[in-house]
Amino acid sequence: MAKAKRRSFTAKYKREIVRKADGCTEPGEIGALLRREGLYSSHLTVWRRELVVGELSALAPKKRGPKGKQLDPQAVELAMVRRQLGVANARAERAELLVDIQKKLSLILGLELPKLDEDR
Image (cartoon, rainbow, N blue to C red):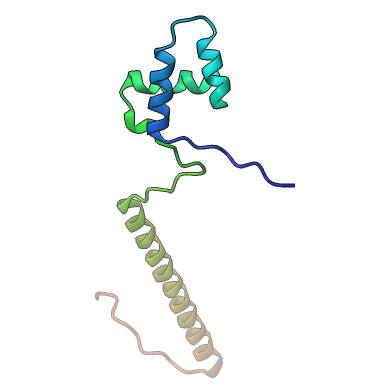
């Protein structure tokens, strides 16, 4: 089975249909126009509303699907700084662990570590 394809209409076509519908004076002419063109009355309603609001560019076919995310430069920089902070914290924890291991090893071996000045 062939998959149904969504129809899209050009802005020129939409303007033309709205113009033709506005020119209809007799009862049933608009219905006949819509049947002839294979359109629904909701198409006409939406297109008229867009023209009234002045959104001529809105008559152009719209892209469907999720919109791309707009990345905030500050959020990107904040994420980068947080990542760098996490790396620095991990390195500091490893260094403290190594110092603790050195202290325990020196106690086991009976070696005396040089005293550090606490004033620095």
